[in-house]
Length: 377
Image (cartoon, rainbow, N blue to C red; front, side, top):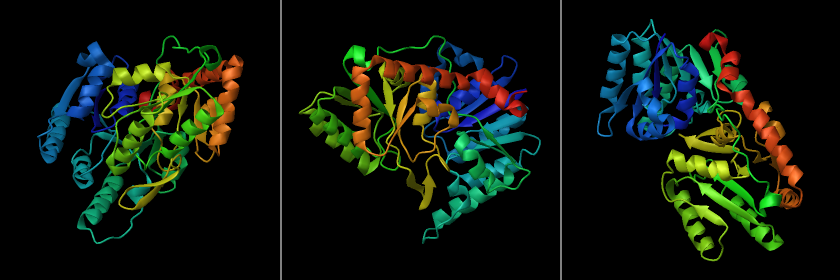
């Protein structure tokens, strides 16, 4: 089969889609932008030449690139076009779908509510975006969400004849588990908070509350904020990190995009992933999204890819396949209690780490394909 995969931003989420379709028999063309392409080069390395790459340059017009996708799809006689991230110009992409009636189209929706709900405002652009999204939804027959916890929510908005898949934002490929010395044996608990510092997605005040509580209680931890920063909130947290780091040595942070090799190294060295997820948030046009229901945290996929146990708010919906390696909390004090115990009992972390490995094995390429036979038969 001849397949096209389109990605503008979420390179880490497009990688598993490419790997899932790459069975050695398909011809795969990837349409992407320059920034994701840089990270794809880290992810695929010498295997880059397995695929045909159509890359939009930073100074290239987006509408011209959409035309390029259309021409290439027709010229290469692509049979399936998988649209993994459509973040703007939805009306033009709806037109693209309409102009390709013989091509099977599958589209991933990352923020479900924004496609079906509307909050009026004195903004022509907001109206145009919503109209474009509605046209896009009406033109596509098959959709994907990146977490099982989102499937029924999306289905509730769609007519019965439209299909919803759940292809995760990561697959597990570790031939041999990286493994960590337990916190008890190492004498320190290493926590990582992956992702861009963005107040719409994570509450970083909880990170500082945890650090201060552990410092007062004599709990030896180290924390890495593994990502750049976004907007005024991100800048504020970055400044707070600098002030904190002047007096303490148990917090590390980055000031820009973290390339994939460094990201993977830090993830592998961590004991636990800490996800202080904001449950209800607004990302676009005043529409409220709920993490675990209408949108999924990228941290879940970092957890899957690196087979890490994690600490998560009790109110966050997490996939059933990961629950046994998740420590839930309603207060920072509960986290401190768990960390204290893990520093004194090596078996506590070792058992949790084994569960994380078993859970990630549920997300291998073979198992994800088995759960979606109509896509990968």
